[in-house]
Image (cartoon, rainbow, N blue to C red):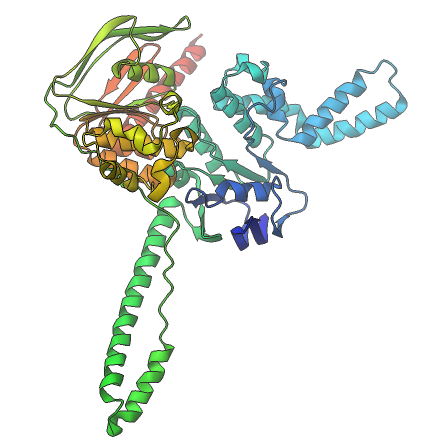
Length: 544
Protein backbone atom coordinates (compact mmCIF):
# COMPACT_ATOMS: atom_id res chain seq x y z
CA UNK A 1 0.00 0.00 0.00
CA UNK A 2 1.15 3.53 -0.79
CA UNK A 3 -0.75 6.57 0.39
CA UNK A 4 -0.54 10.32 -0.21
CA UNK A 5 -1.55 12.28 2.87
CA UNK A 6 -2.39 16.00 2.53
CA UNK A 7 0.08 16.44 -0.32
CA UNK A 8 0.60 20.03 -1.45
CA UNK A 9 3.21 21.10 -3.99
CA UNK A 10 3.78 24.77 -4.76
CA UNK A 11 5.87 25.95 -7.70
CA UNK A 12 6.37 29.62 -6.94
CA UNK A 13 2.93 31.08 -6.27
CA UNK A 14 1.15 28.31 -8.16
CA UNK A 15 -0.12 25.24 -6.29
CA UNK A 16 0.20 22.21 -8.58
CA UNK A 17 -1.38 20.01 -5.89
CA UNK A 18 -3.47 21.10 -2.92
CA UNK A 19 -4.19 18.79 0.06
CA UNK A 20 -4.29 15.61 -2.03
CA UNK A 21 -5.33 12.47 -0.14
CA UNK A 22 -5.38 9.16 -1.99
CA UNK A 23 -4.59 5.52 -1.20
CA UNK A 24 -3.30 2.95 -3.72
CA UNK A 25 -3.85 -0.63 -2.55
CA UNK A 26 -2.38 -4.01 -3.37
CA UNK A 27 -3.68 -5.97 -6.34
CA UNK A 28 -4.84 -2.93 -8.29
CA UNK A 29 -3.46 -1.11 -11.32
CA UNK A 30 -4.15 2.63 -11.31
CA UNK A 31 -4.08 4.73 -14.47
CA UNK A 32 -3.01 8.28 -13.58
CA UNK A 33 -4.55 10.64 -16.14
CA UNK A 34 -4.87 14.38 -16.65
CA UNK A 35 -4.22 17.17 -19.13
CA UNK A 36 -0.69 18.16 -20.13
CA UNK A 37 0.78 20.15 -17.25
CA UNK A 38 -1.65 18.71 -14.70
CA UNK A 39 1.27 17.11 -12.85
CA UNK A 40 1.06 13.38 -13.62
CA UNK A 41 4.83 12.81 -13.85
CA UNK A 42 5.42 15.20 -10.96
CA UNK A 43 3.03 13.24 -8.75
CA UNK A 44 4.86 9.99 -9.59
CA UNK A 45 8.13 11.68 -8.57
CA UNK A 46 6.55 12.64 -5.23
CA UNK A 47 5.36 9.07 -4.69
CA UNK A 48 8.81 7.69 -5.52
CA UNK A 49 10.59 10.11 -3.18
CA UNK A 50 12.51 11.80 -6.01
CA UNK A 51 10.65 15.04 -5.33
CA UNK A 52 9.72 16.45 -1.91
CA UNK A 53 6.25 18.00 -1.56
CA UNK A 54 5.77 21.41 0.03
CA UNK A 55 3.48 19.85 2.62
CA UNK A 56 2.15 16.39 3.42
CA UNK A 57 3.73 12.96 3.38
CA UNK A 58 3.90 9.69 1.47
CA UNK A 59 3.17 6.57 3.54
CA UNK A 60 4.34 3.14 2.38
CA UNK A 61 3.58 -0.14 4.16
CA UNK A 62 6.74 -1.01 6.17
CA UNK A 63 8.98 -3.55 4.46
CA UNK A 64 7.55 -3.00 0.98
CA UNK A 65 9.86 -2.27 -1.95
CA UNK A 66 9.04 0.46 -4.46
CA UNK A 67 10.34 0.39 -8.03
CA UNK A 68 10.00 3.06 -10.71
CA UNK A 69 10.88 3.42 -14.39
CA UNK A 70 14.11 5.39 -14.77
CA UNK A 71 14.04 8.24 -17.30
CA UNK A 72 17.82 8.84 -17.54
CA UNK A 73 18.86 6.69 -20.50
CA UNK A 74 22.58 7.31 -19.92
CA UNK A 75 22.75 6.56 -16.19
CA UNK A 76 23.87 2.94 -16.65
CA UNK A 77 26.06 3.29 -19.75
CA UNK A 78 29.09 1.67 -18.10
CA UNK A 79 27.15 -1.37 -16.84
CA UNK A 80 26.18 -4.48 -18.77
CA UNK A 81 22.55 -5.14 -19.59
CA UNK A 82 21.91 -7.97 -17.09
CA UNK A 83 23.48 -6.04 -14.23
CA UNK A 84 21.38 -2.99 -15.09
CA UNK A 85 18.21 -5.06 -14.85
CA UNK A 86 19.21 -6.67 -11.55
CA UNK A 87 19.85 -3.18 -10.12
CA UNK A 88 16.07 -2.93 -10.10
CA UNK A 89 16.46 -4.62 -6.71
CA UNK A 90 19.35 -2.53 -5.42
CA UNK A 91 19.76 -4.54 -2.21
CA UNK A 92 20.12 -7.79 -4.13
CA UNK A 93 22.66 -6.23 -6.49
CA UNK A 94 24.69 -4.83 -3.56
CA UNK A 95 24.74 -8.28 -1.91
CA UNK A 96 26.00 -9.86 -5.15
CA UNK A 97 28.82 -7.32 -5.42
CA UNK A 98 29.73 -7.65 -1.73
CA UNK A 99 29.79 -11.47 -1.97
CA UNK A 100 32.04 -11.33 -5.02
CA UNK A 101 34.43 -8.97 -3.25
CA UNK A 102 34.67 -11.23 -0.17
CA UNK A 103 35.22 -14.42 -2.19
CA UNK A 104 37.89 -12.67 -4.28
CA UNK A 105 40.04 -12.00 -1.18
CA UNK A 106 43.32 -13.88 -1.00
CA UNK A 107 43.43 -13.65 2.83
CA UNK A 108 39.89 -14.99 3.51
CA UNK A 109 39.29 -14.68 7.29
CA UNK A 110 36.83 -16.27 9.68
CA UNK A 111 35.00 -12.95 9.88
CA UNK A 112 34.75 -12.98 6.09
CA UNK A 113 33.24 -16.44 6.27
CA UNK A 114 30.60 -15.33 8.80
CA UNK A 115 29.77 -12.27 6.71
CA UNK A 116 29.57 -14.34 3.54
CA UNK A 117 27.24 -16.79 5.25
CA UNK A 118 24.94 -13.95 6.32
CA UNK A 119 24.95 -12.53 2.80
CA UNK A 120 24.22 -15.95 1.29
CA UNK A 121 21.17 -16.28 3.54
CA UNK A 122 19.80 -12.89 2.49
CA UNK A 123 20.75 -13.62 -1.12
CA UNK A 124 18.64 -16.78 -1.08
CA UNK A 125 15.71 -14.97 0.59
CA UNK A 126 15.74 -12.42 -2.26
CA UNK A 127 15.72 -15.23 -4.88
CA UNK A 128 19.26 -14.34 -5.86
CA UNK A 129 19.93 -17.72 -7.45
CA UNK A 130 17.21 -16.97 -10.02
CA UNK A 131 18.23 -13.33 -10.55
CA UNK A 132 20.03 -13.74 -13.87
CA UNK A 133 17.45 -16.10 -15.34
CA UNK A 134 14.59 -13.84 -14.18
CA UNK A 135 16.31 -10.80 -15.69
CA UNK A 136 16.89 -12.69 -18.95
CA UNK A 137 13.21 -13.69 -19.09
CA UNK A 138 12.13 -10.06 -18.77
CA UNK A 139 14.61 -8.93 -21.42
CA UNK A 140 13.58 -11.64 -23.87
CA UNK A 141 9.91 -10.85 -23.30
CA UNK A 142 10.56 -7.21 -24.22
CA UNK A 143 12.51 -8.19 -27.32
CA UNK A 144 16.14 -7.80 -26.15
CA UNK A 145 17.97 -10.72 -27.75
CA UNK A 146 20.08 -13.01 -25.54
CA UNK A 147 23.30 -12.02 -27.34
CA UNK A 148 22.85 -8.45 -26.03
CA UNK A 149 22.46 -9.41 -22.36
CA UNK A 150 26.18 -9.01 -21.60
CA UNK A 151 26.67 -5.92 -23.79
CA UNK A 152 27.32 -2.54 -22.20
CA UNK A 153 24.33 -0.24 -22.04
CA UNK A 154 26.23 2.43 -24.01
CA UNK A 155 26.39 0.07 -26.98
CA UNK A 156 22.58 -0.19 -27.21
CA UNK A 157 20.36 2.09 -29.26
CA UNK A 158 17.72 4.31 -27.66
CA UNK A 159 14.82 1.89 -28.09
CA UNK A 160 16.81 -0.99 -26.60
CA UNK A 161 17.82 1.13 -23.59
CA UNK A 162 14.15 1.94 -22.93
CA UNK A 163 13.33 -1.77 -22.85
CA UNK A 164 16.22 -2.56 -20.48
CA UNK A 165 15.16 0.19 -18.07
CA UNK A 166 11.60 -1.12 -18.18
CA UNK A 167 12.88 -4.63 -17.39
CA UNK A 168 14.80 -3.07 -14.48
CA UNK A 169 11.61 -1.55 -13.07
CA UNK A 170 9.75 -4.86 -13.37
CA UNK A 171 12.56 -6.97 -11.91
CA UNK A 172 12.26 -8.75 -8.58
CA UNK A 173 8.49 -8.55 -8.08
CA UNK A 174 8.36 -5.08 -6.48
CA UNK A 175 5.52 -4.39 -4.05
CA UNK A 176 4.81 -0.99 -5.62
CA UNK A 177 5.53 -0.28 -9.29
CA UNK A 178 5.50 3.25 -10.74
CA UNK A 179 5.59 3.54 -14.54
CA UNK A 180 5.75 6.86 -16.41
CA UNK A 181 4.89 6.35 -20.10
CA UNK A 182 6.17 2.75 -20.23
CA UNK A 183 4.91 2.16 -23.80
CA UNK A 184 6.90 5.04 -25.32
CA UNK A 185 9.30 3.73 -27.99
CA UNK A 186 8.09 0.14 -27.54
CA UNK A 187 7.06 -1.89 -30.58
CA UNK A 188 3.66 -3.58 -30.61
CA UNK A 189 5.04 -6.98 -29.57
CA UNK A 190 6.72 -5.47 -26.50
CA UNK A 191 3.57 -3.53 -25.60
CA UNK A 192 1.44 -6.68 -25.78
CA UNK A 193 3.96 -8.53 -23.60
CA UNK A 194 3.89 -5.69 -21.04
CA UNK A 195 0.08 -5.72 -21.04
CA UNK A 196 0.05 -9.41 -20.14
CA UNK A 197 2.74 -8.90 -17.49
CA UNK A 198 0.76 -6.15 -15.74
CA UNK A 199 -2.55 -8.01 -16.02
CA UNK A 200 -0.95 -10.92 -14.15
CA UNK A 201 0.98 -8.73 -11.68
CA UNK A 202 -0.40 -9.14 -8.15
CA UNK A 203 0.98 -6.03 -6.45
CA UNK A 204 0.31 -2.27 -6.74
CA UNK A 205 0.86 -0.51 -10.08
CA UNK A 206 0.50 3.21 -10.82
CA UNK A 207 0.97 4.06 -14.49
CA UNK A 208 0.94 7.22 -16.59
CA UNK A 209 0.24 6.63 -20.27
CA UNK A 210 -1.31 8.38 -23.29
CA UNK A 211 -2.19 5.00 -24.80
CA UNK A 212 -5.94 4.63 -24.25
CA UNK A 213 -6.05 0.97 -25.31
CA UNK A 214 -3.20 0.15 -22.91
CA UNK A 215 -4.97 1.86 -20.00
CA UNK A 216 -8.21 0.05 -20.81
CA UNK A 217 -6.38 -3.27 -20.96
CA UNK A 218 -4.39 -3.10 -17.71
CA UNK A 219 -6.08 -0.68 -15.31
CA UNK A 220 -8.55 -1.63 -12.59
CA UNK A 221 -8.86 2.00 -11.39
CA UNK A 222 -8.41 5.50 -12.81
CA UNK A 223 -6.99 8.45 -10.85
CA UNK A 224 -7.91 11.71 -12.57
CA UNK A 225 -5.82 14.83 -11.87
CA UNK A 226 -7.70 18.07 -12.49
CA UNK A 227 -7.16 21.48 -10.87
CA UNK A 228 -4.72 20.16 -8.27
CA UNK A 229 -7.07 17.44 -6.99
CA UNK A 230 -7.14 13.71 -7.69
CA UNK A 231 -10.48 11.92 -8.07
CA UNK A 232 -10.42 8.13 -7.93
CA UNK A 233 -12.72 6.00 -10.11
CA UNK A 234 -13.16 2.22 -10.06
CA UNK A 235 -12.67 1.02 -13.63
CA UNK A 236 -10.47 1.62 -16.67
CA UNK A 237 -10.08 4.69 -18.89
CA UNK A 238 -13.30 4.18 -20.88
CA UNK A 239 -15.24 3.70 -17.64
CA UNK A 240 -13.74 6.93 -16.27
CA UNK A 241 -14.67 8.82 -19.44
CA UNK A 242 -18.25 7.53 -19.43
CA UNK A 243 -18.61 8.15 -15.67
CA UNK A 244 -17.20 11.67 -15.81
CA UNK A 245 -19.38 12.60 -18.78
CA UNK A 246 -22.43 11.11 -17.06
CA UNK A 247 -21.63 13.07 -13.89
CA UNK A 248 -21.37 16.32 -15.87
CA UNK A 249 -24.63 15.54 -17.69
CA UNK A 250 -26.44 14.79 -14.43
CA UNK A 251 -25.14 18.01 -12.82
CA UNK A 252 -26.29 20.04 -15.84
CA UNK A 253 -29.73 18.44 -15.75
CA UNK A 254 -30.01 18.99 -11.99
CA UNK A 255 -28.97 22.64 -12.39
CA UNK A 256 -31.46 23.10 -15.22
CA UNK A 257 -34.29 21.86 -12.97
CA UNK A 258 -33.09 24.12 -10.15
CA UNK A 259 -32.92 27.10 -12.50
CA UNK A 260 -36.49 26.43 -13.66
CA UNK A 261 -37.59 26.21 -10.02
CA UNK A 262 -35.75 29.44 -9.20
CA UNK A 263 -37.45 31.22 -12.08
CA UNK A 264 -40.86 29.89 -10.99
CA UNK A 265 -40.33 31.05 -7.38
CA UNK A 266 -38.98 34.45 -8.45
CA UNK A 267 -42.01 35.04 -10.69
CA UNK A 268 -44.38 34.12 -7.85
CA UNK A 269 -42.59 36.38 -5.37
CA UNK A 270 -42.49 39.27 -7.81
CA UNK A 271 -46.17 38.84 -8.63
CA UNK A 272 -47.62 38.39 -5.15
CA UNK A 273 -45.18 39.96 -2.64
CA UNK A 274 -47.37 43.10 -2.49
CA UNK A 275 -50.58 41.06 -2.20
CA UNK A 276 -51.67 40.84 1.47
CA UNK A 277 -53.59 37.59 0.98
CA UNK A 278 -50.57 35.97 -0.69
CA UNK A 279 -47.84 37.53 1.48
CA UNK A 280 -47.33 34.41 3.65
CA UNK A 281 -46.98 32.25 0.53
CA UNK A 282 -44.54 34.76 -0.99
CA UNK A 283 -42.47 34.76 2.22
CA UNK A 284 -42.46 30.95 2.23
CA UNK A 285 -41.24 30.90 -1.36
CA UNK A 286 -38.49 33.41 -0.51
CA UNK A 287 -37.19 30.96 2.12
CA UNK A 288 -37.40 28.12 -0.39
CA UNK A 289 -35.51 30.22 -2.94
CA UNK A 290 -32.71 30.94 -0.47
CA UNK A 291 -32.20 27.20 0.10
CA UNK A 292 -31.67 26.37 -3.57
CA UNK A 293 -27.99 26.16 -4.48
CA UNK A 294 -26.74 25.42 -7.98
CA UNK A 295 -24.03 22.74 -8.26
CA UNK A 296 -20.66 24.30 -9.02
CA UNK A 297 -19.73 23.38 -12.59
CA UNK A 298 -16.04 24.06 -12.72
CA UNK A 299 -14.83 23.42 -16.27
CA UNK A 300 -12.16 20.78 -16.76
CA UNK A 301 -8.58 21.86 -17.39
CA UNK A 302 -8.61 19.54 -20.41
CA UNK A 303 -8.62 21.23 -23.80
CA UNK A 304 -9.36 19.45 -27.06
CA UNK A 305 -7.94 20.86 -30.30
CA UNK A 306 -10.17 20.90 -33.36
CA UNK A 307 -8.57 18.77 -36.09
CA UNK A 308 -10.30 18.60 -39.45
CA UNK A 309 -8.48 17.65 -42.66
CA UNK A 310 -10.48 18.94 -45.64
CA UNK A 311 -9.00 18.03 -49.05
CA UNK A 312 -9.11 20.76 -51.68
CA UNK A 313 -9.69 18.17 -54.43
CA UNK A 314 -11.46 14.85 -54.61
CA UNK A 315 -9.09 11.95 -55.16
CA UNK A 316 -9.26 9.80 -58.30
CA UNK A 317 -9.00 6.02 -58.72
CA UNK A 318 -5.23 6.04 -59.37
CA UNK A 319 -3.52 6.94 -56.10
CA UNK A 320 -0.11 5.31 -55.72
CA UNK A 321 1.83 2.50 -57.37
CA UNK A 322 5.04 1.27 -55.71
CA UNK A 323 7.22 -1.04 -57.80
CA UNK A 324 10.22 -3.04 -56.56
CA UNK A 325 11.48 -0.40 -54.12
CA UNK A 326 14.81 -1.18 -52.43
CA UNK A 327 16.97 0.89 -50.10
CA UNK A 328 20.16 0.14 -48.17
CA UNK A 329 21.17 2.29 -45.17
CA UNK A 330 24.54 1.88 -43.41
CA UNK A 331 25.08 -1.45 -45.12
CA UNK A 332 21.68 -2.85 -44.10
CA UNK A 333 19.01 -3.49 -46.73
CA UNK A 334 16.06 -1.74 -45.11
CA UNK A 335 13.66 -2.12 -48.07
CA UNK A 336 13.97 -5.15 -50.31
CA UNK A 337 11.93 -5.21 -53.52
CA UNK A 338 8.73 -3.73 -52.02
CA UNK A 339 5.69 -3.43 -54.31
CA UNK A 340 2.04 -2.50 -53.68
CA UNK A 341 -0.85 -0.45 -55.10
CA UNK A 342 -2.96 1.98 -53.06
CA UNK A 343 -6.68 2.40 -53.78
CA UNK A 344 -8.77 5.55 -53.32
CA UNK A 345 -10.57 4.19 -50.21
CA UNK A 346 -7.47 2.91 -48.42
CA UNK A 347 -6.40 3.84 -44.92
CA UNK A 348 -3.28 1.73 -44.51
CA UNK A 349 -1.50 1.12 -41.20
CA UNK A 350 2.13 -0.04 -41.40
CA UNK A 351 2.75 -2.17 -38.32
CA UNK A 352 5.41 -4.42 -36.81
CA UNK A 353 8.79 -3.93 -35.16
CA UNK A 354 10.67 -2.77 -38.27
CA UNK A 355 10.00 0.95 -37.81
CA UNK A 356 13.12 1.99 -39.75
CA UNK A 357 11.72 0.33 -42.87
CA UNK A 358 8.44 2.23 -42.59
CA UNK A 359 10.17 5.56 -41.92
CA UNK A 360 12.44 4.99 -44.92
CA UNK A 361 9.47 4.13 -47.15
CA UNK A 362 7.59 7.26 -46.05
CA UNK A 363 10.63 9.47 -46.67
CA UNK A 364 10.91 8.07 -50.19
CA UNK A 365 7.20 8.56 -50.90
CA UNK A 366 7.41 12.12 -49.54
CA UNK A 367 10.35 12.90 -51.83
CA UNK A 368 12.85 13.33 -49.00
CA UNK A 369 14.94 10.29 -49.95
CA UNK A 370 15.78 8.48 -53.19
CA UNK A 371 15.42 4.68 -53.50
CA UNK A 372 18.40 2.59 -54.63
CA UNK A 373 16.19 0.58 -56.96
CA UNK A 374 12.59 0.58 -58.12
CA UNK A 375 10.18 3.48 -58.38
CA UNK A 376 6.82 4.86 -57.29
CA UNK A 377 4.15 6.91 -59.00
CA UNK A 378 1.51 9.15 -57.46
CA UNK A 379 -1.80 9.61 -59.32
CA UNK A 380 -2.30 12.94 -61.11
CA UNK A 381 -5.25 13.84 -58.86
CA UNK A 382 -3.30 13.35 -55.65
CA UNK A 383 -1.65 15.86 -53.33
CA UNK A 384 0.34 14.70 -50.34
CA UNK A 385 1.07 15.97 -46.83
CA UNK A 386 3.78 14.25 -44.80
CA UNK A 387 4.17 14.10 -41.03
CA UNK A 388 7.75 12.96 -40.22
CA UNK A 389 8.66 11.03 -37.09
CA UNK A 390 11.59 13.39 -36.46
CA UNK A 391 10.61 17.00 -37.16
CA UNK A 392 13.80 18.60 -35.76
CA UNK A 393 15.16 19.97 -39.04
CA UNK A 394 11.79 21.53 -39.93
CA UNK A 395 11.91 23.79 -36.86
CA UNK A 396 15.57 24.80 -36.99
CA UNK A 397 14.72 28.43 -37.73
CA UNK A 398 14.05 31.70 -35.92
CA UNK A 399 10.60 32.04 -37.51
CA UNK A 400 7.53 32.65 -35.40
CA UNK A 401 4.73 30.10 -35.68
CA UNK A 402 2.70 32.40 -37.96
CA UNK A 403 5.69 33.14 -40.23
CA UNK A 404 6.55 29.44 -40.38
CA UNK A 405 3.01 28.50 -41.48
CA UNK A 406 2.43 31.39 -43.91
CA UNK A 407 4.24 29.86 -46.95
CA UNK A 408 1.92 26.83 -46.81
CA UNK A 409 -1.26 28.90 -46.72
CA UNK A 410 -3.24 29.55 -49.93
CA UNK A 411 -4.34 32.86 -48.39
CA UNK A 412 -1.48 35.11 -47.32
CA UNK A 413 -3.48 36.50 -44.46
CA UNK A 414 -2.35 36.45 -40.85
CA UNK A 415 -5.93 36.20 -39.58
CA UNK A 416 -6.54 33.13 -41.74
CA UNK A 417 -3.44 31.38 -40.39
CA UNK A 418 -4.21 32.37 -36.82
CA UNK A 419 -7.61 30.71 -37.27
CA UNK A 420 -5.89 27.36 -37.73
CA UNK A 421 -3.62 28.03 -34.76
CA UNK A 422 -6.61 28.86 -32.59
CA UNK A 423 -8.14 25.48 -33.41
CA UNK A 424 -4.86 23.88 -32.31
CA UNK A 425 -4.89 25.67 -28.92
CA UNK A 426 -2.41 28.42 -29.83
CA UNK A 427 -4.24 31.46 -28.50
CA UNK A 428 -3.43 35.17 -28.47
CA UNK A 429 0.30 35.90 -28.54
CA UNK A 430 1.22 32.22 -29.04
CA UNK A 431 1.47 32.91 -32.76
CA UNK A 432 4.61 34.99 -32.24
CA UNK A 433 6.44 32.23 -30.37
CA UNK A 434 9.65 31.10 -32.06
CA UNK A 435 9.18 27.60 -33.45
CA UNK A 436 12.61 26.41 -32.28
CA UNK A 437 11.63 26.83 -28.60
CA UNK A 438 8.31 24.94 -28.84
CA UNK A 439 7.77 21.77 -26.81
CA UNK A 440 7.46 18.41 -28.53
CA UNK A 441 3.66 18.47 -28.30
CA UNK A 442 3.48 22.06 -29.60
CA UNK A 443 5.63 21.19 -32.61
CA UNK A 444 3.33 18.29 -33.43
CA UNK A 445 0.30 20.61 -33.28
CA UNK A 446 2.05 23.08 -35.61
CA UNK A 447 2.81 20.25 -38.08
CA UNK A 448 -0.86 19.22 -37.97
CA UNK A 449 -1.87 22.85 -38.58
CA UNK A 450 0.34 22.82 -41.68
CA UNK A 451 -1.33 19.65 -42.94
CA UNK A 452 -4.79 21.11 -42.43
CA UNK A 453 -3.82 24.33 -44.26
CA UNK A 454 -2.39 22.40 -47.24
CA UNK A 455 -5.70 20.60 -47.87
CA UNK A 456 -4.08 17.49 -49.35
CA UNK A 457 -6.08 14.38 -50.23
CA UNK A 458 -3.33 11.94 -49.17
CA UNK A 459 -1.90 12.04 -45.65
CA UNK A 460 1.31 10.26 -44.60
CA UNK A 461 1.75 10.03 -40.82
CA UNK A 462 4.90 8.58 -39.22
CA UNK A 463 4.11 8.20 -35.49
CA UNK A 464 1.89 11.31 -35.15
CA UNK A 465 0.70 10.42 -31.63
CA UNK A 466 4.16 10.75 -30.08
CA UNK A 467 4.39 13.80 -27.75
CA UNK A 468 0.63 14.42 -27.79
CA UNK A 469 -1.59 14.38 -24.72
CA UNK A 470 -4.70 12.22 -24.51
CA UNK A 471 -7.01 15.01 -25.63
CA UNK A 472 -4.95 15.81 -28.74
CA UNK A 473 -4.65 12.12 -29.61
CA UNK A 474 -8.43 11.77 -29.36
CA UNK A 475 -8.95 14.84 -31.57
CA UNK A 476 -6.44 13.60 -34.16
CA UNK A 477 -7.98 10.12 -34.05
CA UNK A 478 -11.44 11.55 -34.80
CA UNK A 479 -10.07 13.87 -37.49
CA UNK A 480 -8.38 11.06 -39.41
CA UNK A 481 -11.42 8.77 -39.09
CA UNK A 482 -13.66 11.30 -40.87
CA UNK A 483 -11.00 12.35 -43.43
CA UNK A 484 -12.40 11.44 -46.89
CA UNK A 485 -9.01 10.88 -48.55
CA UNK A 486 -6.26 8.25 -48.40
CA UNK A 487 -4.09 7.72 -45.32
CA UNK A 488 -0.79 5.85 -44.96
CA UNK A 489 0.34 5.82 -41.35
CA UNK A 490 2.15 4.14 -38.52
CA UNK A 491 1.48 4.50 -34.81
CA UNK A 492 2.16 2.63 -31.59
CA UNK A 493 -1.28 3.68 -30.30
CA UNK A 494 -3.41 0.54 -30.59
CA UNK A 495 -6.77 2.31 -30.55
CA UNK A 496 -5.59 4.82 -33.15
CA UNK A 497 -4.65 2.01 -35.54
CA UNK A 498 -7.73 -0.12 -34.84
CA UNK A 499 -10.25 2.69 -35.38
CA UNK A 500 -8.66 4.10 -38.57
CA UNK A 501 -7.07 1.34 -40.65
CA UNK A 502 -8.98 -0.81 -43.15
CA UNK A 503 -5.78 -2.32 -44.53
CA UNK A 504 -2.66 -3.54 -42.72
CA UNK A 505 0.87 -3.82 -44.08
CA UNK A 506 3.96 -5.15 -42.35
CA UNK A 507 7.47 -5.08 -43.82
CA UNK A 508 9.16 -8.30 -42.67
CA UNK A 509 12.50 -9.97 -43.45
CA UNK A 510 10.53 -12.32 -45.69
CA UNK A 511 8.78 -9.58 -47.65
CA UNK A 512 5.66 -7.41 -47.41
CA UNK A 513 2.51 -8.70 -45.68
CA UNK A 514 -0.55 -6.94 -47.09
CA UNK A 515 -4.05 -7.68 -45.73
CA UNK A 516 -7.46 -6.04 -46.08
CA UNK A 517 -8.46 -6.31 -42.44
CA UNK A 518 -8.73 -4.49 -39.15
CA UNK A 519 -5.77 -4.29 -36.80
CA UNK A 520 -7.30 -6.54 -34.13
CA UNK A 521 -8.13 -9.18 -36.75
CA UNK A 522 -4.58 -8.94 -38.06
CA UNK A 523 -3.12 -9.42 -34.59
CA UNK A 524 -5.36 -12.41 -33.95
CA UNK A 525 -4.33 -14.04 -37.23
CA UNK A 526 -0.69 -13.16 -36.58
CA UNK A 527 -0.86 -14.62 -33.07
CA UNK A 528 -2.46 -17.79 -34.43
CA UNK A 529 0.29 -18.10 -37.04
CA UNK A 530 2.95 -17.71 -34.34
CA UNK A 531 1.32 -20.33 -32.13
CA UNK A 532 1.17 -22.72 -35.07
CA UNK A 533 4.85 -22.07 -35.76
CA UNK A 534 5.72 -22.84 -32.12
CA UNK A 535 3.56 -25.98 -32.20
CA UNK A 536 5.32 -27.08 -35.39
CA UNK A 537 8.72 -26.62 -33.76
CA UNK A 538 7.63 -28.51 -30.64
CA UNK A 539 6.19 -31.36 -32.71
CA UNK A 540 9.36 -31.54 -34.76
CA UNK A 541 11.39 -31.86 -31.56
CA UNK A 542 9.09 -34.62 -30.32
CA UNK A 543 9.49 -36.55 -33.54
CA UNK A 544 13.30 -36.46 -33.44
